[in-house]
Amino acid sequence: MNQHKKPWNRVNLPVYSISSTDGNGNHNMHIITYATAISMQPKQFVCGIYNGTKTLSLVHRHKYFVLQLLAETQYKLVNVLGKKSGNNYNKIAYLEKRDLLTWWNGFYILKDALAVMHLAAHPVDITATAQPDHQLFICDMLAYKNLHAGNALTLDVLRHHKIVRM
Image (tube, rainbow, N blue to C red):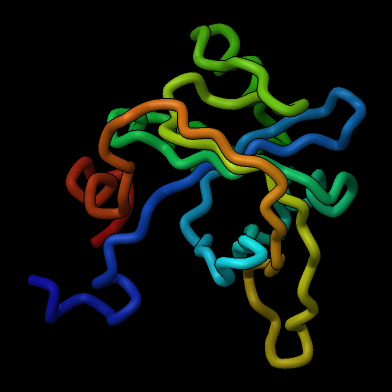
């Protein structure tokens, strides 16, 4: 029942993956649900990247990443991309071994993602208000590509498969 969930858990958010690089051959992928469009012209997103992650370190160094809208059928990837740390697990090697990757605009992307968006990331300093567990970025859309038709992966799908809590 929705009325028993905390208000922020009542919304069925899309699940994305970030593909990041340092521009020197070091790559990673990460799960993100704190991402939303905030401007139509120019097209911009706000993205929250979890502190202490390899993705955050790569984005701070390179300033660009690809936001991938995941397909409903990709729910099992959350166990690797979201529950394992790129600091001590090579997610790209795991995905390459399973032939799940292709190349786009200088980044690895997931072949079965619904869409990809190449973003330029600008960090937002919000530490004056609190010590949040995510770093915020305002991101400018540089390019996008629709890859496949289908339903987007959402938090409700992850809840149904007991990958995230209710």
